[in-house]
Length: 386
Image 1 (cartoon, rainbow, N blue to C red):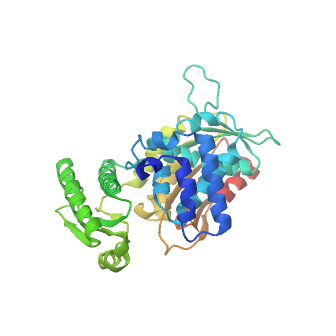
Image 2: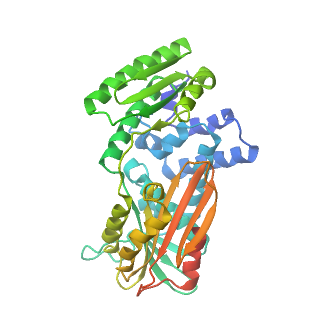
Image 3: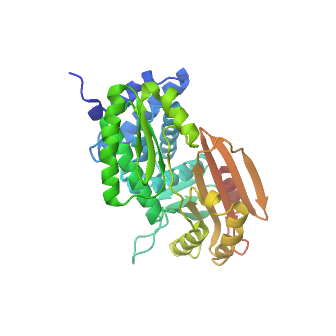
């Protein structure tokens, strides 16, 4: 007897077999995706998907589960990329400590960026050691990564930090998760989009979710599109068979993309938060070595007033710490209108690249007053990979 599809979703084998049903894939791409899934199964274990989903396939909060729930070819490309980074790092010291916590959705963005950066550095010939990176004595603070150039003996420490969402961002993320869980719990054949006008209260969200479920069941059974109206949002939900004729038109009228959950407008102060991250993390890095801080801040350039403003407001704080030579602000977002770009302002470097539907932004702030500095060769490697 065939298992329930929701149970199968928690098994690697299901996703390997599902590759045959995904359109738009070249044979080589499909082979690479299969090899990636098999490698993740071997490396992360049989129960990884169950642990990262808390045993419930409808709770798609973990980024790996979200990618697997998305049957667009680009999602499997990103999974293959992640598996490639893990392959590159095989045998690196203390990697098992990072692998052991990859199921934790609250830590995954930090750890996946750490893995990505470490793999690229290993690809350039450096040796990496994950935490603990220094002797474990007297509550010694531990940087995330120790880098060593085996040819020159140069040692550098690197710290990765994620700029977590603020309170209102977390509230809307929780609201979106509730919507996704409710729709996934009914059927994977549903398509929907949401335009939030304001963040709902806890009680209002519970009421909205119940209304959504009723509307979703009607849309599913009648093969039609149903609207959900509330003080907090507009929503349309339909069966996938009528997405192109009904949902896409509804979204176009509102400036939405099909499948998007957008809004509400929130006021931000990203540069102040960047400076606070640098202050806290510089204390974790040794004073007698050159150091690098990588900050994951996906929307810093969009919400911080542009690259020039981020540089002008953050660089003075970088200059305060003479044991910090480089601070990198990294982010990704989806916007097909963006174009690749590379530019410099004094020693600082900003690059924008477009890969697999995502725009990657990297701002490298170089501390001209640093007492402890990367060698020219190692600095060039960082400029190349960011």
